[in-house]
Length: 141
Picture 1 (tube, rainbow, N blue to C red):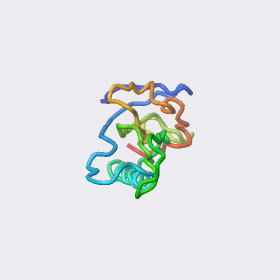
Picture 2 (picture 1 turned 135 degrees about the horizontal axis):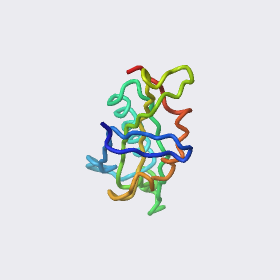
Picture 3 (picture 1 turned 90 degrees about the vertical axis):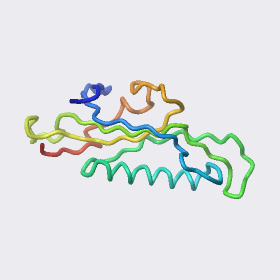
């Protein structure tokens, strides 16, 4: 049973089966947010999402990066991602025309960033506009 349902702008209904949130810079002991650190964080989150949901494609909604201090430091200018990193695993009916809805489902794991814990799924930029048919993959269940 899903946690909730979400309808994309194109009309496809998704079921949310897992939703995780964590502080974007959890565990950062020294240094500061910068472009290289952010790139490493993004790759790590994508790798962990792929490991958590093998067989499900992973899609990252590109984050908005802020540059609060343009003075160059030892690692370049400060470049901050939003405070909260989110991962959600969605499923829906099949995307392949030859797959019947009794035997097949489609799945997609989505990553995004948001500024606080209270952002509703409907308000996540780009989430409702996901091109599901292009990004998701069918699996037999």
